[in-house]
Image (cartoon, rainbow, N blue to C red; front, side, top):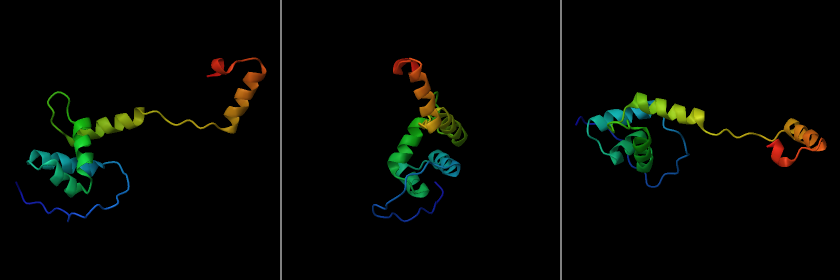
Length: 111
């Protein structure tokens, strides 16, 4: 293994939730290939080791179990694109529903 300078471990640092970036995925991929464990990778990308574990589990190749950064990005982007989007109950939606209720639609037929 080549020597890699890892950031100093900080005791229970408060970290804001954020997605893993493309460059972090590339780092994970390179470090996995060179034999680093999940804890060492987590220190290098400044994420908790559970985040690295989850990333490897979700985005590794299903056929051979190998983690590749480009595949991981495609899988992550696909999940993000396909996830359920929050729909707002706007005033125009409310007006449309009230109009439908006035003409004897039931709440079940409106949904």
